[in-house]
Amino acid sequence: MPDPKEQVGINKRKNAAQIVSLLKKAGFEAYFVGGCVRDFILGITPDDYDIVTSAHPDQIMTMFNRTIAIGAKFGVVAVIMDGHPYEVATFRSDDSYDDGRRPSKVHFTSAKEDVYRRDFTINGLLMDPVTGYIQDYVDGIADIKKKIIRTIGNADTRFNEDYLRMLRAIRFTANLNFSLDPVTKEAIFKNAAKISSISAERLQDELTKLLTRGGANFGMELMAQTGMLSVILPEVDSMRGVEQPPRFHPEGDVWKHTLLMLKILSAEIKSGVSPALAWGVLLHDVGKPVCRSEDEKGVHFYGHVQQGEKIADEIMQRLRFSRLLRETVLNLIHEHMMFMNVQKMRQSRLKRFLRIPDFQLHLELHRLDCLASHGLLDNYEFCLDQLASLDKEDLHPPRLMTGDDIMAMGFPSGKIIGEIMKALEEEQLEGRISTPEDAIVFVRKNWEK
Image (tube, rainbow, N blue to C red; front, side, top):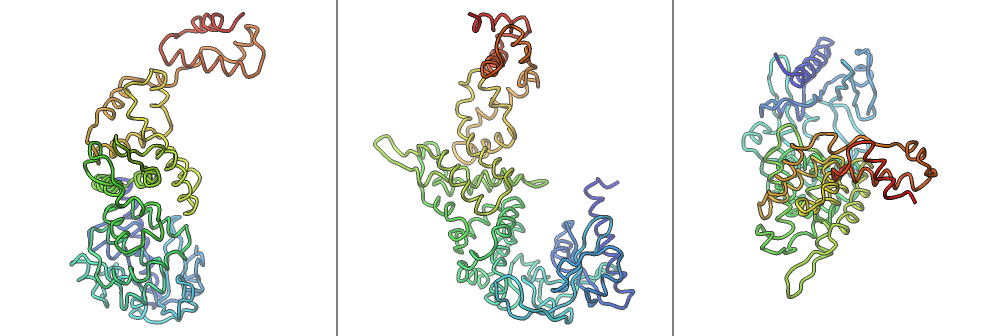
C-alpha cells in the first residue's frame, strides 16, 4: 500500500490523465508536457503535471466544471480536480518579447510549434499518458540520456525572451546533476546583466529551488562562472578569495567553506531541505569580507556576525522574503558563533540557548559549519547529550509564583514584578529552587526590606 505522499502522486497523475482523455474524446489533441515528462524518463515522481492541447481557452472552460482563467490571454487555464489546479495551455507560438518576460502577443498554433518556443530540450517533450508514447521534436530524450541542459534553438533568443531562463538553466543543471551545454553557458555569460530586470519574487523562488533541491554548491559555482552571482548576489560573490586562518579553516577561503557546506547539505537531502537552513548556510559568513583584518597575530573577522545580519537582511529585503523566513535566517546568523561557548555556559544560559526557536536548525547549521572546516563536533555532540538528558520542564520550568502571588506579598504592580519573575526562572534553570516555598524564601531574601 503506497504511503500518503505516494498516493497523492498517483492521484495527481490519474486526474491529469483524465483531463487529457476528456480533451481527446472531445476531438482535441492533448498531451503531458515539460517537466513531468522529463521526470518520468528520469524515474522521478512528478510534483505537478502540465498539459497542452489544441483546444482554446473558452473551449477548455466549457468542458470542465471548475476552471480558472489564470492566463487566458496567453492560452492558459487551470482546471481544478480534487482541489488541485492543473495548468492546461493551448498550443501557441509567441510574438516578440518586449520586457524579457512575456510575449507581446501569442498565436494559437500546432503542437510542434508550441514545443519550439519552449526553453530547454529536456522540457520540450510531449507524452500521451494513455499509451506512454513520447513525441520528441528537439532531441530532448538524447539530452536527458547525455545529462545535458541545452536551449531549444538559439540560446540568445531563448534567454532574451525570458531572462529568468538563464537562472533556470543553472538551477536545472545543479538540481539534476547534469552538465551545462557550452553554447548555452556562453549565452548566459553574455546576457547575465539582464537578469537584474527580473522581479525579486521570481529570483527568490529560483534561488531557493537551487539551494534546496540538490547540487547547490555546483549551482553556485555556475552562477559565479557565468557572472550571474555578481549581478544577483554581489555580497555573496565578494566572499570569493577572502582567505581564512588555515588553523580553523584548512578548506580555504570563505567562498570554498560555504560551497563545502552546501555540498554536504545537498548530499544529505532526502525529503527536501528547509529553505531557512539553506539560506542560513549561504549567508552565515556573508559579513566576513567587510570585516576581515590582519595583524601580527593573524587573520581576524571581528564583528562579522553583526555585519552579516545587516547584509543578509538587506539581501532578503531586496529579494522580498517573507518576514518569518527572513527572521529565521537572521536568527541563524545571529546565533551561529554561540556554539563555541556551550560547554562553558552556566546552566541557565545553556538551557535558554537550547530552547531558542528552531534550535534543530541552529544545531544543523553548526554541524555543517564544523564539517566544512576543522571537523570537530564536540560542541554539537555536547548539545545532543544535553537535549537527551533534559526534559521539557528542565528547559521550560513551570512558574513557581504568578504576578498576583508576588503582589500578595506586598509588592506593587509594575516593573519589579517582571524583574522578580525573571530572577525566579533564572534560579529554577540553575537548579537552586524547585518549589513555591523556595520561591517565597528567595523573594523575601532578595527584595523585602
